[in-house]
Each structure stands twice: as C-alpha cells, then as structure tokens.
Image (cartoon, rainbow, N blue to C red):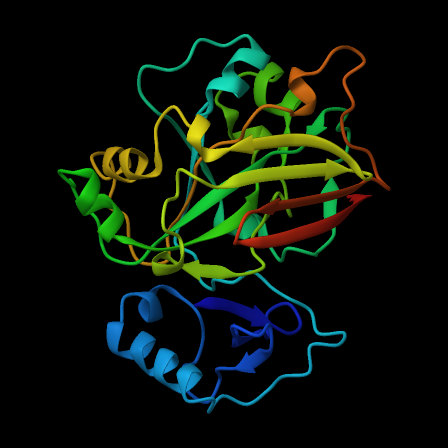
Length: 285
C-alpha cells in the first residue's frame, strides 16, 4: 500500500494512493497514519480490505497539499557515510560500524514544502536517502531476518545538511542537521510488502534540473537489515520511528571548488524507484 497524509500543515488527513493512482480518503477507517496504526495489523487489514473492495471515497487531489506520510514521529535516527561511493567522494574511510546521529522529529516536513536556507548559511547541501519506518518495537534484534520483520515500510527522505555548521563549528554533526525544514519526507509511506529488495532501489536527485545524484542502495556499506539490527543494540526502536539510511555520491560537499551549495531560489527534485518523487524550492529563513 501507498499511505499518505494530505491537507494543510497540522490538519492532514490519512489517505491511500490506489493501484490506479487515485487518491482515496482513509479518515472514515483510521484517524491518522502513525506508529500505533503501523503496529496494528487489524487496522492495516481493514485498510487493505476496503481498498480491495473499492469502498474508499475518492479525494480531489487538485491543489491538495501532501504532508509527511507519518504523524507523531518519535525519533529520526540517521546513518552517516553509508555508501561506498559517497565515502570515496568525500575522502573518508568507510566506517567499521555505522555512524549514528539524530535529527529532531520537528525537522520533518512534506515532500513539496518549502525548505529554508538557515541564516548565515553558505554551505547548505542536498542528500537523497532511503527512509525506513519501524512498525514493531525493536530491542536487541539478533538477525537480519528479524530486523526486516520490524520494518513497516519505506519512504523518500531528503537529509538536507548545512556543512559548515556540521563540520566546521565544533562538536557533533547535530548543528548542521537540525535546522527547520531539513527533513522533507514522502510523498508516500510504501508498505514493506511492496518493496521486494531494499538493496535494489535507485536514488536520484536534481538541482535546477541538473542530475546530481544517481545511485543505488546496492552501494550501501551497511544494508537496511544490518542498520536496523545494529541500531536496536543501542536504543529501543518504536513503531513510527524513522531511520534515514545514508546518501550516495553526488552531494555538493564532494564536488570540486567552487562547490555548488544551495541558495534561495534553487529547486531540488529527488526520487527513489517505487517510492515517489519530491520537489522543494529553497528560500531564505
């Protein structure tokens, strides 16, 4: 299933994109798309049954905002330097263990919402990423099979980053990762049953129409199953938590001088095969 949330910010309603690309209203069946729903197999079954029966009302998508496909996110766990080609382009050694950092849940916005270039920023960068959405509470998972069984679905994430804040201002990466609007998510949460192999997805990103990133999750140093298993050794993952799993080569940081960092007026588009496409215009904060 392709689950999404539509409407004005803070007042989104749950919806489903059916096999014919028609937007359907879920608000008569479930209150929202969130962690409790993803953990409730009976509620998900009701959605599937109603969709299969053609019983869901049609929504007029014209002019309707698409919000983040997940409400009330508990935490956004991020994995850094998780693609062989990205490590090479930045001159970094591939990590021996996953690099883990966090984004605040309030950085998450819709896939077509405006992204704000922070005040005094000169190194705002792009990163297309595969987001993993947790569907079952995960603690100390033992195997890759067990890890994948805890995944509810997948989505496109844009891990916007400010490289000066991240790298040159001391401390951890958090200052360059948590600026407002720095995590567009969606358009859909695609349930795990529709993603046959999370290590066989193409990722692409364009800036002002120019292709910048063209990668595949096959390049991940730590695949999705290992990321989920590994993270569960250090923290409890709850339904509705999100893991951003890293970006392939092609970011501004890895390009020759003068590096083409983002400015107000730039337009970024990104997509992952089967998971949909995003588009954001950048404006000054």
